Image (cartoon, rainbow, N blue to C red):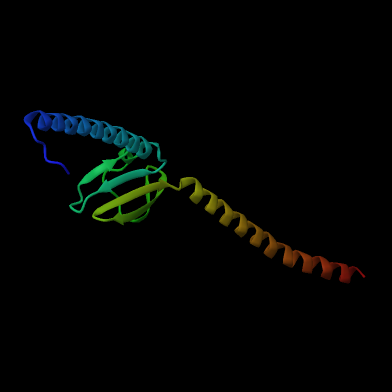
Length: 138
């Protein structure tokens, strides 16, 4: 690195530094806006908290919650959410995914399996009875 020889060179270098700083700041703001857009676009509620549990970033889908929920499944306003956490360095990312439809489908599958099992158990004695009745007729 060269040391400036005169005040003019020093001023010119300072102006370049200031200009470069403005460009970097503009790029940083653009990237931050893109990141905020991506976070808002996500289908999950999302929080990013620091080591002091201060919220750094959150999207609008977090408005359904009164506070940051704990890991697991929770029900809020007839909706079921799966809460997950991940830690990166000293930041924690918490997401809440709406799994209401998935839970409904699981319940319907379980009811269908139970109905099929019940129908099978009802058919078994009826089949035996019809065989016995046909033997009695003969």
